[in-house]
Amino acid sequence: MMRKTSYVLFATMLLIGIVAVPAIAQDSTAVGQDRATSRVLLQHDDFVRLNVENVGDALSTITGVYVNAEGEVMLRDVSASKVVVVMDGQKLNVASGSGVNVSNISIDNVESVELLRGGRSAEFGADAVGGVIVIKSKAKTENAEGTSFSQNFGARATTGSYNLQIFSLNHSLQTDKLSTLLSYRRDIWSGNFDYTDIYGNVKELPNNNLNSNSIFGKVGYQIDEEQTFATSYSYYKSENGSAGTITNLTPLSRLRYDNQSANMNYSNNDLFSGFRLDANTFYQNYRTRFDNPQGTVPVHSDHKNYATGIELKQAGALTSMLNLSYGYSYRNDEINSTDVGDRNRITHSAFTTITVANTDDILTNLSAGLVSGWDVALATRYDSPSDFRSEFSPRLSLGLTNANNFATTRLQSHIAKSYRAPSFNDLYWPKDSFAMGNPDLVPETSINYDIGINISVPIYTHSVSTAVNYFRNDAEDLILWAPNGPNGLWIPENISETETWGMETSGSITLFDGLFTTNAEFTYMEALDKRPEYYNNYIIYRPKNKLSLTGTLKTHGIEWSVVYNYTGLRYTKASNGNNYLPSYTTINSNISYNFNLQGVRQTIAFELTNIADEDYMKTDGTAEPGRMYKLSYWINL
Image 1 (cartoon, one colour):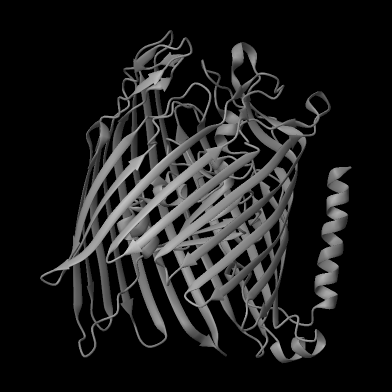
Image 2 (cartoon, rainbow, N blue to C red):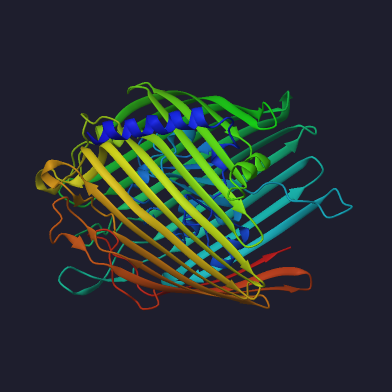
């Protein structure tokens, strides 16, 4: 019944949007929204201010975002496998179903990190049920005036708790036509911190070390005024300890990653009649090995994930108001695994977006000045995977803006249909001592609604901004791993219906031209199971309340921030009851100093996390380190 009502409402809104709107605005992926609503954008200044080492660190600073120990991102009510990560147009997710480890992407290589919440299958295809992370690597830098050549060299060193050591080097070069970027990074962490077991005893968590190396290279070439070519290559290799859970420690197990990816892009800004062509092709080779010689049955698993693909996209203006983009993509996913065997999935996709530019004069006359601009975007996508039914995913966005001398107000709303096909792990994982796959799974679908209002008011040297966003996600056949099998095995199941709704709120005050800024963000969410046996119980590991308070003082190159985070209780079983993890709070602080010494830009930063040394769990059976420090120093020549 829920799904039928949702589709009726969805179809009605689409019809209203198509009939009532004469034209459509800019591409829906670029519709402007403020922090704490549907979109959050982090850039270089944010990376420096927050003293982040990698993309995972950067995303962890956003309220409602959880990055687990494996570097995988979870948003709102969805797991990491339902969050798509895109870097330079290349989708990093693979069909095995595990999330993308964003913590192995060094921030030294990144120009921006963009978080898009809510269903995005219309733009990004399968798995974009909960949202999308869009990462852009550094592009060419501007040459100094009067020169045609420039280069930059950077070095960074970090030390911290539990023998944390991070070293990175990067070099970039820019000429009139050629740009290059090359970086290397090494991470070491012993990681054997103390924790409290289920009996209240304090013990050391063994085998929690990290040792990794990563390389990233990018070359861009300006063919002429309209055409550019770029290619990039990344390599990540690590050998880590895998501690297991505090009730089932694995002190001898090893986890190894050996990942490679390559990407090529060609762009022509004026292929015909002002239309731009973007062509992207990629190759991924991700290998994961896990060995545990202990236990009743020793485990030696090896998973090789391969992905190749190409995407062609054209975009341009049909009139001064009407814009159109369309394209086609082909993707081939393969896995060769000791556990799930040899599997293959080929997906063909076609997509289009119609948009309309702002019509200020018309709107001002019609609305008596209440609305100074609007934008509407309708995106649609058709995906045809080789092993499941084809899916059609539309998304409608509407934005209204009122800008005057006193304030800028922005109303943004979306309605979207998204889907996710079961992964190879969901379907075929063999029965072991922890989990078992389910070959009877079917794709999950969902209808997602978002509506938010953002208000910004400048007051002399001060500014005040606030944002409120309502979201709702009605899912059918939700794929959820839970300990429901024999002997507590984790097994994926299709939950017939779920309903998630909530409010995201944000408020920020900036005083004295940025000298002091305070920001508060609060998320309230109810993620409810609608199965008769668990009707209106909370879905596991979805907290009802999350709060973040931040205060930042900036003066004379010094920036000091204090961050308070609160996460509410999370149920660990579908039956709820007394099966939950209690709420927890953390307090973190970071201070940095930026200065120039003999023309060399330098930064020193000190970070202290979990200042109160709180003992808590993010997931049942896991442990989190207590108070930790991190000292960083980097230079740019």
